Image 1: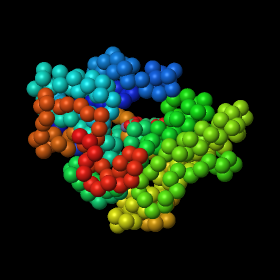
Image 2 (image 1 turned 90 degrees about the horizontal axis):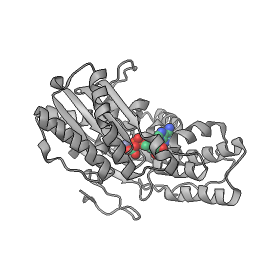
Image 3 (image 1 turned 180 degrees about the horizontal axis):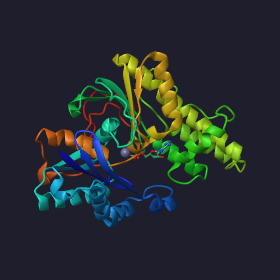
Length: 359
Ligand code: KG4
Ligand code: ZN
């Protein structure tokens, strides 16, 4: 079955055609970076307008690049949560319009589930690595979310949060630190590029969340630590000093992400670790996680770069699993800013049992 995926949860307008369950036939991503960059972050109203402007073009391009027409498609998958409500509404409305006109089944997909399974995508021309085996521990690190999960199956019920951030997501910290250093938006790729030239120990940046045994994260402290450094020293004019600050920040963040992922794998007694989300594109994180896995005989499976950052192929894959079971949400899909995955970490506080925090 061919699945049309649509993703508009934040600042990427994306559409993809997937030959279920895994094979990517096309994957079109229109980035809104230039729209939001002057504001140093995503402006929700502008995101919705830009999705509306480009949605149709992006969907047409996805069909064209896959060399198929709508009549070849067997089902539609659209991101319906979590994300910016207005942005999500544009994608869901487009998907509902197509489903209504074509009579195709339609499923709403949780963006985080898309990220968690993005490692299973097979893209043409890419070296094929054996897919991970269940159960595995997944580290999801994006601009809006940072969490560790135990994943037992493709069912949403087989995904359990082990710990998440209490405040900022890792990607958010990259973006805010880059902004404080005058490096523009989004910050992750710039810091990734500048950090290798720096010495991570040349400037003192406090490590995030020193409690070693918890599987929760906190990144607002390290962001403040960098902001304080900038307040005291100014934005470095010397490129090597700028690289030192980027290196120190990135080193601290990567260190805590890798350490807690390995603790989670050991506690859950799993031998496979999977990475997902935009920050999974970070070269230092990919490398350090691989090395830590090698030391502990844990297999680390990392998605290709195109599968890490927001894309619609991962939404088509997650939705395709439901469509293959004959499921359809019809035209009842509604949007929510919150994930449907059960959460155990309360923002700003400690663990609080296993009931869902939100929708
Ligand atoms: O998954 P994603 O594309 O969107 C969300 O669902 O949030 O993640 C975007 C985030 C941004 O914060 C961006 O700065 C970060 O991923 N990012 C990176 C890198 N590439 C993107 N962070 C660190 N290193 C990178 N190479
Ligand atoms: Zn994302």
